[in-house]
Amino acid sequence: LRSHYVPHMTIAPTPFDPDVPGGGVEALVRRKPDDMSKMEMVKAVWGSDPRFSDGINYRFVRTEGRVFPERRCLIPASEFRMGTGKHRYRVRLDSGNFFYLAAIWDPPLADWPLSYRILTIDAGPDVSPYQSRHGVIVERRDVMHWLDGTIPDETLFAPPPKHSLFVEPLRAQAALPL
Image 1 (cartoon, helix red, strand yellow):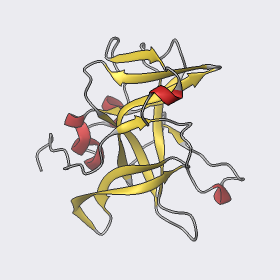
Image 2 (cartoon, one colour):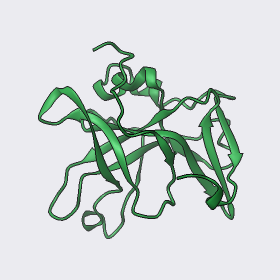
Image 3 (cartoon, helix red, strand yellow):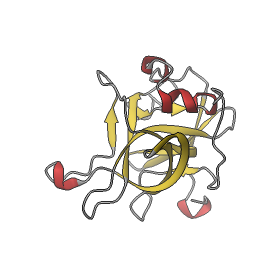
């Protein structure tokens, strides 16, 4: 596959909102576990099984000092949302293109479904005035590089350059489609 290949998407990228009702069920893109030559898009639940972590549902994984050789996946997004105190914001690529959030997936176990956790980095200059971390953004040209591990993680885990993200206050929740 060429490095710029992006799998045909049957589910449109949507805002990634950590406060969405319904448990954060999202589509994820990954290599098929039983045939790594193929891609698939499947629904998964956001967060780890709390039975194995003292009742905590971990939804994020820090990238610092870690490697992720297996179970890489991507969450399609048109934007991500964040909040500080009473204020909420939407963050989009300044270009307006959709992107992916880098994640790792966990297989279903007992009554816990297929799930994923978003990888995070220190916030880049556009987001740091609002919060200290955000998800790893994978642009479409780097989809296969992330899934196949063909580019150094440090390259993908670098904060986006200044003015590459557009941050704006989130209007009333009812005014924006989810």
